[in-house]
Image 1 (tube, rainbow, N blue to C red):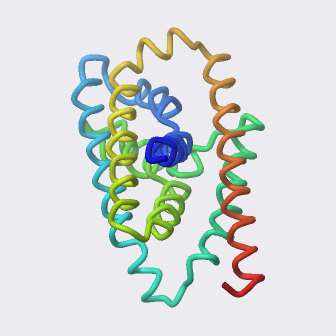
Image 2: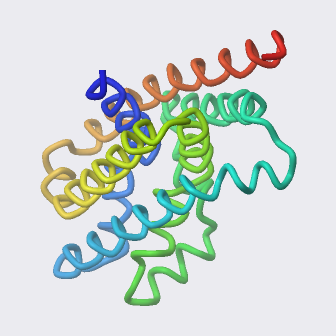
Length: 206
């Protein structure tokens, strides 16, 4: 039971984080010799951002009087749009980082935080997903499961980034496109779960 929940949360986070696409972008921004250090800083940035969102995301929603079913519904729409873009082969990363941000990143040594960590990896879709997963975790045990998933996701991000050169050579251009489309399908399925669940709760008034 616990393993199933950890697996679901981890897959949800990893598919939306999409570290493989981020790895390809990283190769165009940093020198090969800097990959280990940048990978470590980027994964740490993602981990910290995930933890902050996990514990403070719900508080921010309550301040603005937004309920969880509404977030699940609109979050499902946001994720569905991201999924459709991925399935159609459209680049998702450029919509999260402006050309000015990418240009500035290429002109400075440390690109781990911006734009790699935020917003290429940790974007709106990830924020929405973490808030939804956090708010549905009502018990200490469920919070612990989400925390484990966040730790696992951050470790996977690091492993993928630090092996960016090998993964890029192994998959190639077509492999990266196929992987992105498969991730898009998974995100689309998760999006429908969020969307239908949110609308159902709002409709029934529970």
